[in-house]
Amino acid sequence: MAKTKHKIKQLVEQQHDEVVEIRRHLHANPELSFAEFNTADYIESMLKSMGLTRVRRSATTGVIVELGNQHKPTIYLRADIDALPIKESNEVGYKSTVEGVMHACGHDVHTATLLGVIKVLSQMEAELPYHTVCVFQPGEEKLPGGASLLIKDGLFDQSNQGRMVGNHVHPPLQAGQVGFKSGMYMASADELYLTIKGKGGHGAMPHLTIDPLPIVAEIVQSLQTLVSRYANPSTPTVLTFGKINSVGGATNIIPDTIELQGTFRTFDEKWRFEAHRLIKARIDGICLGYGASANVDIRVGYPTLYNDPVFTEICKSHAIDYLGAEQVIDIPMRTTSEDFAFYSQEVPSCFYRIGTDNPSHDYSSSVHTPSFDVDESCLLTSVGLMSYLAFQA
Image (cartoon, rainbow, N blue to C red; front, side, top):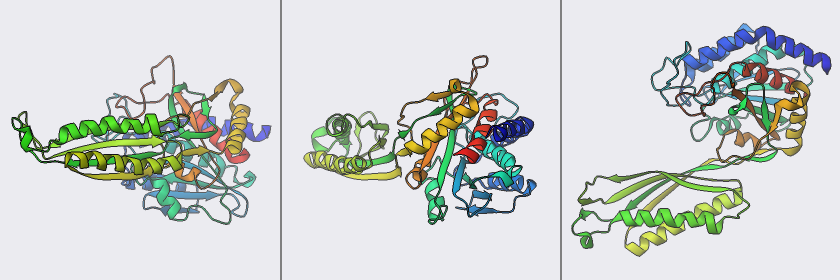
């Protein structure tokens, strides 16, 4: 495969400036989850300019394109296309032109990468050993997750499911580096919406009320024991409340109602749903003791992201071949979540990380922040490796 590797690297170098311009166009024109209409049109126009015809829409703003012989085993390559409701603080020529919307999670890099990969593969299509399905997925940042909708829309042919590859920007790694983790990699993520209803009144006469505030305080404290005393210590579990809000109220008014919002994350699907039951039971029990009531809405989000160990090690070995062993890093589990997890529950999958930092210019700002940006040389790595995996994985 030395000849193939050389040709891929040559094509990636030749088109790098164009891929950078694609990324900058996408960055300047972000769209929120499930509203990526202009982005989808732009992707389709790029595919049309490459002369590709096997292109279709899925889940409204998703775009799918096929290359190679459809009777061969299938490999799926995925990019997400949506942006976040964040106001960009970077002062760059490609700064977001949409007020309050920004590609702060690198989906512009992912989309530009996959368009670059398609440009490479389309010039080598006769040599492709697999049926290659490239997936531009909407709505990664918002439940129910665009991945789940594409699956429901028939993404996977049950007679030939194949394998799936995806990547994601990663500021802790330097541009040129990639990171792999076999097995359980990212946590499930469920959203908690609680409403605790008591009986409000004057703050000077609490005996005439059912004060929801101490009830909420007890709930928040008590639920932490679900992690410390019910979860298997070997299974990472996180229960966090990020928002508490009383409805009405003032310094001397006890409110009727308090609302809470939080997140529950873990790496074990059986424990995940057992925890949901325990959360509801614990809240109902505490409220009953005070004479209050509760509405507990647990919105099931993304499942655990599982990197198939055999397939991931294959991808990692090819990354070493393509980039060199010093550029391929072992990375740990993380309790963030990704809707690529839906794919990983369906077919053997590998989701790896692309380094984006550069010590000579600080690109270390975390994703989901107003100052996030990347060293665009990372596109050489992301386009090249994914192209190589389309041949090897």
